[in-house]
Structures are given as structure tokens and as C-alpha cells.
Amino acid sequence: MKTDDLISMLSTNVERVDRGQVVRNVSFAILVGTAAALVAMLFAHGVRTDLSKVSTLIYLPLKLVFTIGTLVLTAIALTKLARPGGERTTPVALVALPFLMIMLLAAISLAAAPSSHWEKMIVGDQWLECLLSIPIIAIVPFAVIIWALRQTAPTDLVRTGALGGLVAGAVSATAYAFHCVDDSLPFVALWYGGTIALCTLAGALLGPRLLRW
Amino acid sequence: MIEAELKNLMIAGLNGDAAAHRSLLERLAGHLRGYYKGRLARIGRSATEAEDLVQEALLAIHTQRHTYDPTELLTPWVHAIARYKLIDHLRRTRASLGDVPIDAAADITAQDDHVGAESAYDLQRLLSRLPEKMRRAIQYVKLDGLSVTEAAVRCEISVSAVKVNVHRGLKALAAAIAAEKSKT
Figure (cartoon, helix red, strand yellow):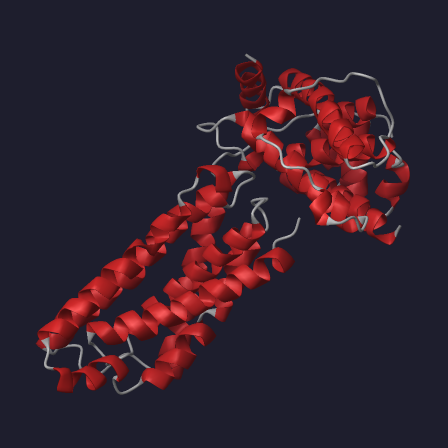
């Protein structure tokens, strides 16, 4: 095939291109993933029953600020990173900000509490359930997000995969937060932060395989 | 400035200006040819592979144009695609990744090589591997130059279905090229 022939072919009947496609596809995938995660949470666990208690009304929003903050920040970074050459201009390290904040708050709340309370604050009641639920609930959102990222031609597959896993983990943690009754900040920092980090690692490992184009 | 000129052509092309799109692809072909010949020569690979890569990169640039963000520079976007295709090519043809030279975005427009050339790919053979509806859509709209509306009448499907088939068909064409390469 002559290169000139290829160019003629490609520039015959050129269509106008919709430039909002990348942002729209990624946002849509996150919405679908969130819906799937909420449904999974409702069927597997159910919403916590003490929603009307004052302490719940304080701590649930706090957890959601962490998970949704991570979600939004990562989603914005992803719409830049996932394009060809996006790794040059995207400050990926910024997505660690919510993690640093929650760790700082966890440290402050531990410092303010007597050391006899520490074990209860860190390990909580349902650490195992949390450890298993967040990665499992993240599977469907991860699949949907990978589907969207396959249309954005990423050139840094490890980092794009990592942020895809991070978004899926944050989506999953957001849904799981409506069920989880462990409200201490050290618990959220360790088990939420840790499982989301695990999802990020899984995404980084799977990225080169799943995102190749 | 090369960047400003290419970017203007790209934006006009994104708005549906076929002449601008053609002239963008023609100019990029020259730069890509220079880039690939240089890179391949440096690692002792034959320059005939360069034209295959030029065509793959052009196809990728065309099918992925929706990923270009006009608030960013165009050259780094083109370079990222060109380099990605080079690495993918070396991986598929089993070269060591240590062979990939380090380079910067400006390298993509550093050379301009306009020797008209031919790749090892046979368009008709590649097209024959595509699903019927995609193959016909590309034949009518991209090769015979029929309008999308005319093609829709001939294929007895909607105008938007023709557009989708053309787009998916070009992506499938890129995939067919990659598959062909992995085999050899």
C-alpha cells in the first residue's frame, strides 16, 4: 500500500469529531460503575441501620468526603492521563492528597485518644469484611472503566491502569461506606486506604495487558 | 512554527475540513518517516520497516483524533502515538526493549522525509479480513468516495450506522495489521 493512497483514503469524507468523547466516556463509565457498586453493596450487605444516629451523621459524611474526594480527583487526572502523551502533563502524584489527609487525621485522632483505645480504633469490628468487600465490589466498576480507557489510546499503560484501579477502588469504597459501621478515622485510613491502594496496584499490574491498543 | 501550523490543520480537520486533514496527514507522514528511519537505523533495523510504521502511526492518528485535547500542544500528542507504535512494533517483532532509543517530543518534527514510499501491507487483503459491513462501509465512503448518505442507501442502513462502521472498520484495520505483524 502506498502511503499517499492511505492518506487519500483517510481524508475522504472526513467527519467532524466530537471532542468531548473522552471526558464523557470516562464519566459515564464511573457512573455505571458506581451504580453497580451500590447495587452490589445493597444485595450483599445492606445499608447500615443506624443512619439516624448523630455519630453516624458525622462520620459517614467524613468517610464519603475521603472516598468521593479521591474519586473526583482521580477521575479528573484520568481524563488527562489516559490520552496519548497524557503522562507528560498530568500531575499524577496529586491523587495521593486525600490519602495523606486521612492519614494525618488518623494520626491526630490516635494522638488524642488513650493508647488503650488504639487497637479498637485501628482494627475495628469488621476489618476482614472491609478488606474483602472493597476489592470484590471494585471488580465490575474496574471492568467498565477499563472499557472506557481502551477508547482513549493511553500511552502509559501502567499509570493509566493504576489510576483505573484507583477510581474503581474509590467507587467501591464509596458504596461500601454506606454499609460499614466502623467509624474511626484510623480504621478508614488503614482499611479503606489500604484496599484502595491494593486496587491501584492491581490496576497497574493489569494495565499493560488490558489497555494495549 | 511547525507546531502552530500543524495544530491549526489538526483543529480544522477535527471540525470536518477534509483538505486540512489531508494536508496534516501529508506533512505528518514526512515527519514520521524521518523519525522512524532515524530510530530504526540507530538500532540496526532495516529502513523498509519504517514505511509500515509510518502508515500504522497515520492510521492511529486518524482513528484516535478524538483523544487530542486542543488546549494542549499537538507535537507531544503525535510523538506519544509515534513512539507507542514504535515500541509496540519492536515488541511484536521480538526486539529487546532496551533497543528503544530515548527521545523527546521535538524529535518528531526534527526531520522531514518526502520520499514517496510503499509499505508491505496490501490494503485489499487486509480489508478482506474485516466483517462485511465494515468492509463495505470503508469501500463506499473512504475508497469510492460516495457520501455517507449514498452509502447508507446502498447498505440499507442508517447514516449513523455507516459512520460507526467506517470508524470501527479503520480500527479493525489497525488491529489486522498488528495481528499480521505478530504472526511473522
